[in-house]
Image 1 (tube, rainbow, N blue to C red):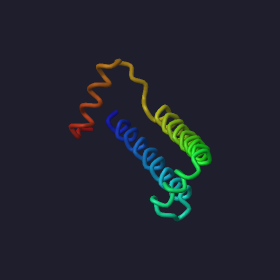
Image 2 (tube, helix red, strand yellow):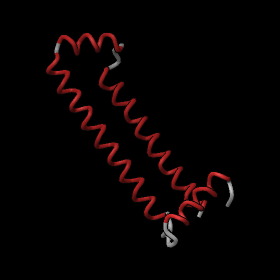
Image 3 (cartoon, rainbow, N blue to C red):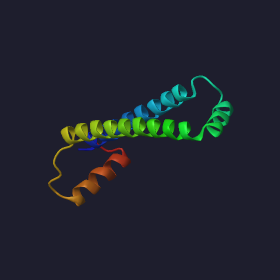
Image 4 (cartoon, rainbow, N blue to C red):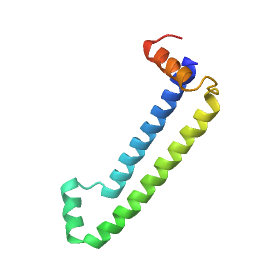
Length: 102
């Protein structure tokens, strides 16, 4: 059971890394190779187009976060065994995981 918890942890970690990598690439794409100071000045000069670009960026980011969370949830559902003993058994499995016992 501890191996399944470790697999669950690694799955979430991979999903989180994908989200961070996607966010960075979207930010670099949004800046279009410009320094952040220049982008801030352009956003200050054209506030409505900046708001629209922020909405589009937020929408893409939210969609990717949801997609990664859905992927992780599907994999967790498939890999975690049914916890028959309730929260007591779950607590013991998690404590074994952090103690390093198998």
